[in-house]
Amino acid sequence: MHVPMRGLVLLACLSRALAQVTVYGQLPLGQVMANLSTTTPAAYNDTVLKDATAQGGLSVPHNGPSFYGFSIEMSVVTQLLGKNSTFIQTPFLNLMANIQERAGGVFVRIGGNTQEFATLVPEGDSRLQPGHTFGKVDSGSTQTTKTPAVLYTRDMFFMQNNISSLVNVKWFLGIPFNDSVNWRINIVEEGQPILGQNLLGLQAANEPDFYVSFGRRVAPYGVADYVREVGEVLQVLKSNSKVTNPNILLGPSTSLYAVTVEHYPHDNCAAMFSPGSGNDVDPQALMPYYLSHTNVVQLAGGLHDHAVVSPEFQTTYTSALWALDYGMQMATQNTTHALLHLGGQNVFYNASIAPPTNQTAFNQWTVGPIFYSAMVMAEAFGKTNTSQIVDLGANSNSDQTPAYAIYESGQLSKVALFNYVDDKSGASALTVALTLNGGVPNTVSVKCAASVSSKTNITWAGQTFGEKLTVDGRLRGNLDVVSIACNTGENTCRIPVPSPGFALVFFNSNDPLLTHNTLSIDWASVATSNGHNAGQLEKALGSTSPGAVKSLAVSERVSRVVSGLAGAAVAAWTFFL
Image (cartoon, rainbow, N blue to C red; front, top):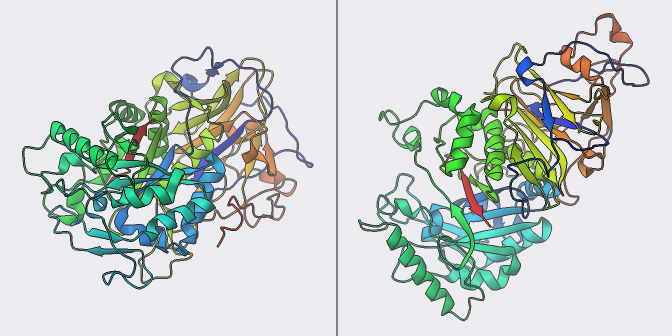
C-alpha cells in the first residue's frame, strides 16, 4: 500500500506476561541504523502497502462500537452483571471499560437458550432469593444441557440502564419462542420504555433449527414455519400500544434492525455430558485446524461456525490468535459485529467468567484468551467509525502468516501481523518488511507466548488481567511500547513477530493509545537477539528484565480503565447492519 506516512510505527504483540525486553543502544537511549542481517524469510521479506484508493477489496467502514461484543446466557446474568440494579459486578464494569476505552462502546446481548423460557415475575416473587432480580426453575427441557427457565423482574432493565450509564453498553434482548400460541412479549413492553435508545434489537427465537430436536416444535418444522411465526410475533408487537418500536427485530423480516447468523453444525457436548460415548472430539487433533488462516477464510466466507466446542483448545492462546484472525476475516467480508458467548461454569469458551457463587466475587474472576482478542480488535478498529480492513494475502497467501491492513478516513492506520507457527526454537520468528510510498515512520512494541497451548499470563503490550480466579477486570503491569527504528534509506520498517504471535503496527503517532512512555530499540538488535546476549555490554546497557541492576522500565503503573470503575464454541453471533 503506497501512502505517505509520518510519525511512529507501534508494534503491540500478544505475549506471555513473563516475556522480557532488553534495551540495546546508547545512554542516553539512541537509535543506531546498523545494516545487520535479519531473520526474515525470503518469501516474506516485502509487504508493500498501498493507499486506500489503490487498495482493492476494502471492507465497508466499520459502524458503531467494538467489532467484538458479548452474548450473555440469560441464566448467568446474576453472576456476570449483578444481583440487582444497585448491586452490579465491578469486574464486569472494568472489563467493559477496557473495550470502551479502545472502541467507544460495547454491544451486549442477554439471551441464549434460556431466553426461550424467560418469564417476567413481580418483584418479591417467592421463587426469587431476597434482593435478587433473577431466578431459575425447571423448564422441562429435554435438550442436552437441560436449559432452565429464567424468572426476571422489571429491575433487569434498570440494571442494564445503570450499566449503560457507567460504560457505553448497548443491548440486545430476545423474545421467548417456546409458546407460539400465547406470545410473551413482556420483555418488549417493559424493556423499550425503560432502556430507550440503549435497546438496539430483539432476537426473534434462538436456534430455531434445533426446535424439533429440543422438543419445542413438532416435526416437520422448517424455515417457512419459522418465518410465519416471526410474522405472527410482529403483528402482536404492532397491535400492542406499549410497544413503541416493533421494527427492531433480529431475523428475516422487513422490520429488521439487523440480519443475524447463529449456526453450530458441530459441537462437543459429548465430552461434557456423555463422555466415553464415542462422539466426543479430541481437541489436540483439532489444533491444526485452528492454526490455519485458510480455514478462517472459508469459515467467515460461508458464515458457518465450523468451530467444534473443544475442551482445552478454547482456553489456550491458540483461541486468542484464532479469534483475532476470525474477527478480522469476518470484518473483511463485511460482517458488522460479532458477539462472543459467555455461559456458565460448565463450559470452556468463556471470554470471562465470575467464580462459583460460594466464593468471593471480587478479585476472583477469570479472563479467557478470547477476551484479549476482543480488546485487541477494539484497539485495531478504534473509535472513528471509518475503519476499513483488507486481507493482504501476505506471503503468497500463506496459511500461517496472514496480515491485514486497516484504514481510517482513507489513510493507512494499522497493520495486523500473525504468526501461527508454534516453534519454541525461535527459528520460525518473522521479521516482516513493510514498505510505504513517501517514507516510513519510526517505532514498535512486542509481546510473546511460549506456546500456542499456553493458557495463562497472556499479555497485551506488557499488561495482563492475571491468572484464573485472580481477576478484577483491570489490566496489571506497566504498559510497554517499544520503539524500533525504521530504515528510511531502504524505505522499510522491519517488524519482528514471534512464533507464535500477533503484532499490531500503528502508523499514527497521534493515536491516543500511544500517549505513554516508550523504549527505543534498534530494529536490527531485535531481529538478531533473544534479549539476553549482550555479553560484556551488560553493565553498560539498561534492561527492563526483572532483577536487572539498571532497569529502564517505567515504574509508574499505567492503568487503562475508566476512573471510578476500579473497584457453545468460540462462538460468533454475527450480524449485519
